[in-house]
Length: 155
Image (cartoon, rainbow, N blue to C red; front, side, top):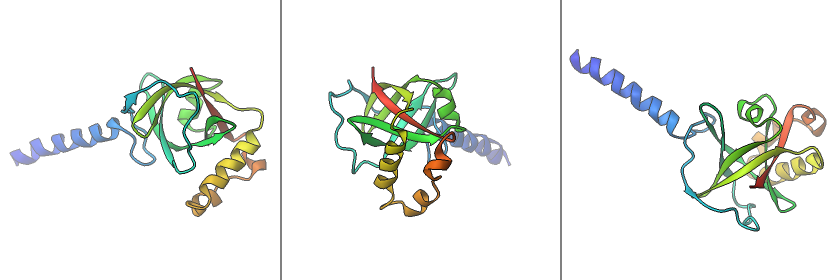
């Protein structure tokens, strides 16, 4: 009985630490990890890169695993406007992006021009490998007003 009284709190603490340590699937984390690096003049080819980690500030920061697309020489991410991390960005916010093992300080800015073209390129990139997920995306007409396309600018 005494072992159970000790083991349950320890196990619970380990589960909480695991969730806070980093994002796990759709569950956001707090720590982004990686080695801090200066943003390159040109981003590497992201056509084979599926996911990045994005850290959005807040009293408790939120780190999400998210897809990324390069469009016009800039990196972009897409999210629901109702998502907590998108709401934290608002009209623009400093963020950190971890690409592979490097972490970059950037600024996320909502895109109002050419957002449809970016969203189409985003869909085209991921549809071959994730057809079921992409099939659940809203149409361009439905996306207007509900989907945020965000550019990740160098600081």
